[in-house]
Length: 528
Ligand code: NDP
Image (cartoon, rainbow, N blue to C red; front, side):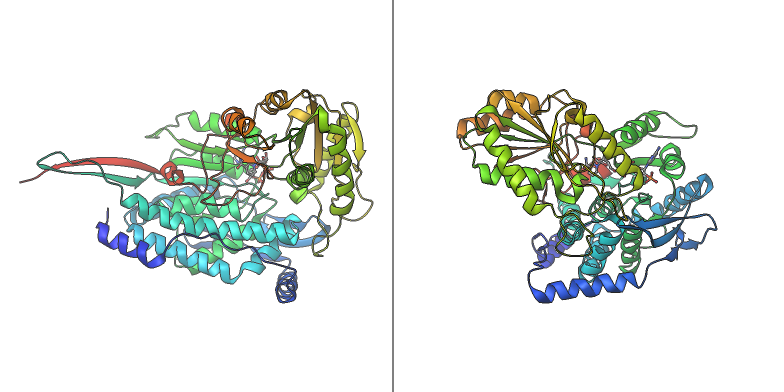
């Protein structure tokens, strides 16, 4: 541990954490700057990228393309496809770097992460522009993703310093301390849907706590992860502390999970893969000296609940934004709206009327388009299949067709009169499909909301304090919002992560998140 004065001095010098402001694109200067960033990154399409292991670039002949889902013939970048041997090499490089990085003072680690935050802030629009093209995010969604990534860097740099200052009680005649040590080598495996925020959050949390990692980006989102990796290098992160390994999860990812030198796995993604990682990580490998720790953030089937006392206009907006922001491809997406019978018809009318005005579908490169494509052809097929299933379970009142054009576009679909146990009300679709369910009363509505295997986010619209107090206690989700949308958690303000099959109950962007990447050593030293 460092002496506390040095740590306190750094904390005082860097000041309190503040969330990165979002960009107001109504201002012409901001819009022009973003257009320029889009043009710049378009000029860099199609470049080839290596793996980076222990600081060495490995350019493989075996590659895969990352494409623009709005124009699948546009290749955003070409990436090296790592196999088992590369994944093993990357773990070994991380293990070698751990020897020095784990002994690097927290202030020095935090300084590099803060430098990375500054570099990302300076390239904010460029980072966001990559996500417009690589993931089909609209301008606002892409900007929010980059802002959240910067927030994670700023927040965790401060949190590691605060952890250095933890004190225990002293027994007479001893000096007693509790030191938070890094764990070792981690596999960091993010999803494609928040490819800046989640990639940066999980990896910077692990790194700033003194661990070394292999970062395996999602195969649909390697470019933005590459931009971040470049930033880490420029910020002065030593070779081998973060190793960049692109390739299929089922091979490269699984090798990282199974490796005996892997100490922890930080994963965000689907329930199916999360459960598989949990099971595999539990199996002791020959030569393994620890139980692997898994930090798993998985899916959701989140609900917005509205009672008869709610402001219905606000609720209609909240329902639509929660369900259809980034085409419903958020773990926090409010894919169910549960409305009490008294206001059911009135609210449906408002939702559909507003959907017509708001959900403009088109190329997200243009600022006026709210709804871009879904991420891939596979995802388009999955979503369209669920829409067919939904036609047998509820009544389709809006959208639901694939657009007859280039790209993986689907008109957002709204189903009404959906039974709570219908498949489209229980399974995570991860696309623009909203199931609206009628409840007898507010308590029934909250019971329906709790009736899935997930427990990630939820929103409750009501004007009655006693009911809100009940929801605070009984609405069983990791992130509950009252009278607002159920998406858009802010780092440091709404620590994020869910219950039950939504994951291992961790809270990204919260004061206890870094503990997941540490082990505490208690030392009692007899004095004199
Ligand atoms: P996936 O589970 O398909 O993939 C996530 C990551 O795991 C990718 O990097 C993938 O690599 C990798 N992977 C795939 N198979 C394996 C394997 N066998 N072993 C190790 N790694 C593997 O999820 P998506 O990327 O499709 O993301 C969407 C999901 O993420 C949704 O379910 C969503 O709810 C969830 N999510 C949860 C959040 C939360 O905080 N709870 C936040 C955001 C998303 P590759 O791409 O190469 O297959």
